Length: 97
Image (cartoon, rainbow, N blue to C red; front, side, top):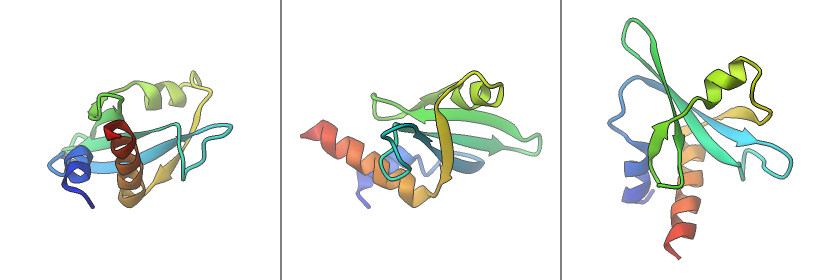
């Protein structure tokens, strides 16, 4: 895994992290529309939702909360850290070409 991918995965992020791939017509878990993650931090279980954005970094998102409320039409599936890294590598490689 490239150092830039490790940086993008934000290895120092706190909490228990779950990654999700946004899937829709034409976008599978292997080639998703995008990825989001939920970090659960501390005893209180505070949740922080973030999307890997066009800025090539994790930024806050309301996607998962809106999905839970039935407001998003784009589905998602849980993916592994390795799958998230593969997506980030493909995006950063495409952007640097």
